[in-house]
Structure formats: structure tokens, C-alpha cells
Length: 356
Image (cartoon, helix red, strand yellow):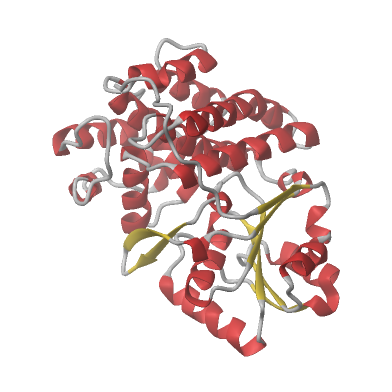
């Protein structure tokens, strides 16, 4: 893994990104810029109250609320939501929430090409990409399409103040994973490297502050900025073993997305570090550690992140299935993806042991 090359093409879809405290109550302005008048608001059941707040703020510019967004974007939920959007004659979608709600909006847009306004309430970063992950019959697949990329993203720090400390940590580590894998991606470049390191740095500095004081709006805004940078990396370059493992675990075992990322991240980094040491050296330095894998494990433990797959309900017998699926249709990876080595990685992650 040598230094990045100077010749690359930076091509971005037109996206309006707005950082504004209280911005969730000013979405009519964003709708007007899109030429839209009939928004359908999307949320999970848990976040329906936040959706109602937006419905109220929009008044006649909102035609309804669909509050059944579901983890891993099941195709049957997407079909249900599309029928609602068609019945209400919605001309745009407003997704308020984390990856589940953003994923639903993307899935609807993929089939209908309706414009999207996304208001993130976590650090998932999916809003910054043209990537859609969805699940059908227990299998999670991903696709890329310009139709999936949201047209507007509104980052409102007031929305993440109420995010519990545990979810703040796992969501932040989920975002970091995008940037870390971007550093050793086959198609990495000068821009993606810069965004990745800036995004990781924002979380390394900001997450401890947010955990100590969840109502610190400045720190929340800094971590949201890191989320956007890490998500932008995800949208620019390919991902590797870490994301493959998390997609397999999430799709086949229906595990919580952010928790799974938080547990797998140090182990996947350690697996690849022997082949990508130069790429990961700046990350180790940010963490004050000799290696990036050990550094992230220690960082996660200090923040109280989950460490063991068994604590998510995974049985040891299920690791065989996960290892088998992980070596099928593998993503490009800087180190060969070998079944026995992957099983050993999963075993350590299942136990909650430090990475090898």
C-alpha cells in the first residue's frame, strides 16, 4: 500500500448541506428550493414524535407521516411506504432519523425518483452517499445509484443532544468505520484521505466531550461535521472486509447496525493492518497508539462501547455461517480474505477479546 496517487477525478452529485441549530423547523425553505409542495415525512416508530414536530412546522406543505422505517431496510416496508407516498401524491420525502429512516427514503427514491431531504439524528453518514443497503429474505445487499443520493441534508445539533451516550458512541464508531476503510480502499485518493483523517479526528476529539456532557452543542456540531466527512468518504471509495462482515451479521442475524460496527471495527482494522500499515499509521498517531487496531479497541472501551457479539445474542455456532457468507462475493480487501482467518477474527469479536 503505497502513497496515494496524484491523478484522480473528484465527481460529486449536487447536494445542499446545511448546518443549522433548529434547522429541522425550517425545512419549508429547502422544499421551496427543490420546487416541492407536498412532503411525506418518514421516521421509525420510536421517532414518530420528532416527525410530528416537522409535520406541524410544515403545515400545509406536509401531506402525511409514515413512521414504520425499520432496521436494515426490508423491501416489504419500502413497498408499504411507496403505496402511502403514491396515495398521498407526495412530491418529496423528508427523512428524520438514523440509518433506518434514511435507508427507507433512499429505497423509495430509487423506485420513484422523489427528491429527498434528510435530517440525521445519528452519525450514520448514509445521508452523504448514493449507496442503498436493503434486506430481502434475510440477505442484505447494496447498490449505488444517483437516484438514491439525497438532494438536501440538514444537520441540526439540537436533534442529537438527546441521543443516549451509548448510542452516541456506537453511532460515532459506525461513522469512523467508513473513513478508516476509505484509507486503505483500492480507489482512495488525496481528497478521500484528507476527508477521512479530518472526520476521524473530529470524532476522536469530540466523542469523549459528548459522552461527558451530552448537551454540549458545540461538541455535538463538531461530531456531526465528522459524520458528514466520514459519510462523504463512504460515498467516494469502496469499502472492504469490515463492511462486508457487518452487512453479513446485520442481514443474516438482524443485529443492531451501529453496535455491530462498533464491535467489529478494531478486529477488522487489525486484520488489515499488516497489509495497510502505512495507510493506518496516521490513525494510530491520532489515537496515541502503536497500532490502529489496538488504538480503536482501547478508545472504544474507554467510551463504554459494546465489545462482544455474544452480548448481542449471537451464539458461537452462528459464527460458522457468518464466516461462510463473508467469503462469498467478497469486497476488495488489502489482505486476502481467508475463511479460517475470518472465523478467528469473529471468534475474538464474539468473546470481546482485544484484536489479534
